[in-house]
Image (cartoon, rainbow, N blue to C red; front, top):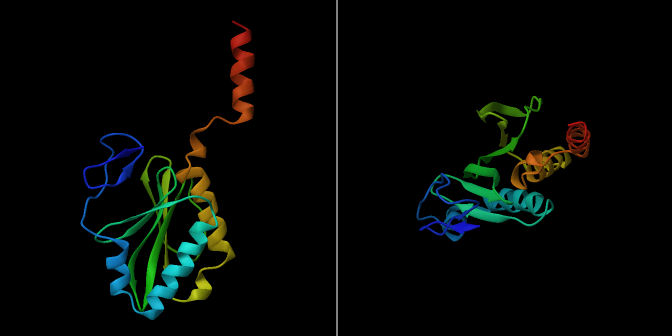
Length: 156
């Protein structure tokens, strides 16, 4: 993993990222008690997925495993917006937006206004996002596709 000049952890050199002089402490200093509780609960859902890194920027807080997979923005006493990535669109009335950012990278936005919104369903989505996108498991060939390749190469 490479470090950029600004200190961001990057999977490869020259990977696009947003530099900004922002720290988690600065974000927390601006949070009221309700925003802090929403943030703490969201981070606990992320922590339950596995090892992660926090990358605060001026307008958002990103969460990384190997790469970014989730984030928060618009964090205030009124609530917050969270986003996570999946390789295919998921469907739920809870999403305020679902958009393909690049091929195979679908962003899913939710508006969180109550602690109750940070529930088991969101935990399941975040866990899938962590594994498939953050840990890049979607890029690893499945056992079935490996067997197909092995069988195909034997016939040559």
